[in-house]
Amino acid sequence: MIRLAIFDLDGTLLDTLGDLAGACNHALSACGCPTHEIDAYKRFVGRGILNLFRSALPEDQRTDDMVMKMRDIFIPYYNEHKNDLTRPYPGILELLDALTAKGIKLAVASNKYQEATEELVTRYFGNYGFTCVLGQREGHPIKPDAGIIIEAMGSCGNIHPEEVIYCGDSDVDMQTGINAGVKTIGVTWGFRSREELAAYSPCLLAENPEEIYNFSILT
Image (cartoon, rainbow, N blue to C red):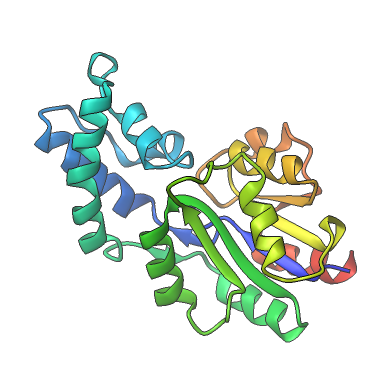
């Protein structure tokens, strides 16, 4: 029986790509660097914002100083514009309603920085009572380290890995679920390809949120 459903945020619960691309392109322009088409960001995101900047910067500009300069420009801009285009994916609210009705607890485990993670979850999903909302934080390793999943499980008290699903849209998420020893679900509506997810043999490749619900109540 599934007792806890943990979700990645970007590309899983929320389509944030347009706002992430807009903020990163703003920072690139301010640093005198070329920008990218939105679709390019599907490969750049998912490993924390510092790795986002390293991917987006020209190869000869990927210095620590430039990454920090990008961060200082990106964060205030993104904080101001992170809801311009961002929306929950179709069926996500219905999924959370259904899981909650079955008594399944909810959590978020993201590589997005903590402030933005909390603000987005509060704005779009604030009425669901997530047991914890975890993002990238100082002193905590980012996914695919399993620590964030173990921390989320700890917030629910006495719970075992076989009672947990972790849902995400990238290879990083699949590796994270494997590392944590929980049932891992790849969602095909996010930023990465079905083939990328399938390479990690997840328990389920979900074509829509309803399939996550069906898996949760039948497992």
